[in-house]
Length: 319
Image 1 (cartoon, rainbow, N blue to C red):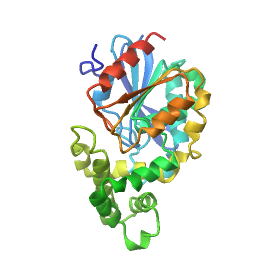
Image 2: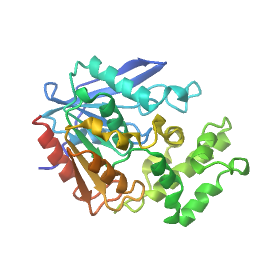
Image 3: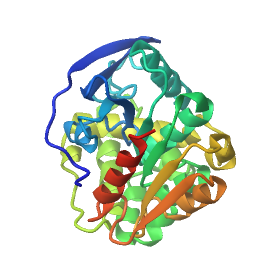
Image 4: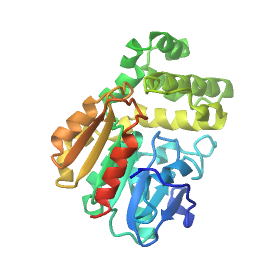
């Protein structure tokens, strides 16, 4: 079977008041009586998209998509001056998911699908609420550890030296004593539009560079939107400069909490943005997990990704 399904519109959607002045957008697609599945988008800050509805069999799943705080159709968006980033943390996102689950009357998620940053959030949620999760599917696995952040903002520059020099060269001298992630986090909240808009442009150019080993990858069209660039870059640097508001290596260390919850981990061999090591370490500490290594993929893409994803969704629909 194909892991992709025809375009579909939500049968229900809304804005959930989660407190702290935030309203989170959510939508349900597929079969209202189907198995409840949750999709967690990447970024942080990218928001969900209509194409992601198509991962789920509309006959078997009640697919729930959510735009995390500050993203997509949720309000307020991060670039809005009134947005307080201190109210946007991993713990806030976990609480938002729980509030939405209760709002929708869902006892437990048959599966949670997370991609990239969505893997980090899915693991954090599942470790906090193991009784609410029956299975997990994690694609292009991350745990947002200190080592991963240092690699993606510093170490990978050895593979892309020209792009790296431009990336760090955009940091002003007065911030030169800081690590790049901390310097960009400051630049992106600078009140001067000339500073934060240029920082967003440079950050997204660096994002495009380090995912470019994905076969067939090209510049991301979403980065052509100045509003998206700023929102995305501000949220990513906010989370990364704070190590996702978790202890270092917390998710790998505490993987045992997931016990016998089955999982499928899908990772590209050529993923230099998030090297395979993280997925491998998680798999070793989580005996109920399966690790599928895609030999034709980087941080996304690959000819077999949708086949592996579809097989996992088919199996977990029987839980």
